[in-house]
Length: 208
Ligand SMILES: C[S@@+](CC[C@H](N)C(=O)[O-])C[C@H]1O[C@@H](n2cnc3c(N)ncnc32)[C@H](O)[C@@H]1O
Image (tube, rainbow, N blue to C red; front, top):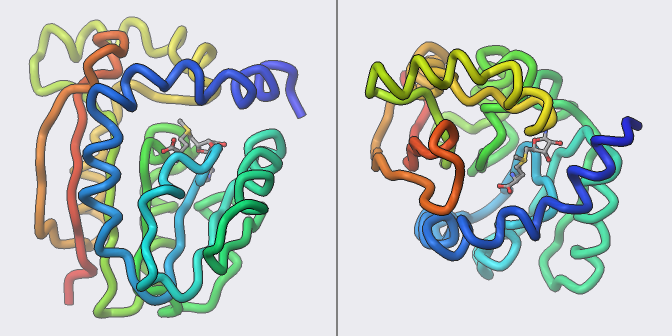
């Protein structure tokens, strides 16, 4: 367990408070309100999505490979009425049966996983054919000037953001993993540094 990993987890909610209030909470609420049945959230972190899950959720499984994050999440689940649990596993190796979830949630995670395409292949595997993936992810800018800054500052972001890449082409990765995009909104994470502002929020389903 790295020292920075512990510091990152301890400070996460405080650092994210302003961007949450300005932008992220609205997207979380909109995307997660439709979660139903068996739900998997990859990289659950400190549980920022927890307040938005409703009664239609029958089972809620969070995966979280970082111990300091997993412990914080478990502490929050202790006060929560939902049938929820935390599984310590990376998104690239999901320890679940194929076609076992109705709904998968990925928020600010595909920037950090070591291998986003492999993680998305795993998400696709564990989703039922009728299932949905909802995503809220900061991505590479479509503005070439900002994208160049994202490339230049990527090394720093990787360290400060505990493995976070600010220049990933996440929408292309989702499509590469054979998902069809049903809904897509582009936004900007105000109150965050410019290199992590470009945001995509949407819903995808496994293509036939
Ligand atoms: C920026 S935080 C986002 C947390 C939360 N999803 C949110 O919306 O606030 C990124 C999370 O991804 C987790 N993570 C890192 N590597 C991962 C991997 N390979 N698979 C799944 N989650 C991972 C981190 O531990 C961290 O909790």
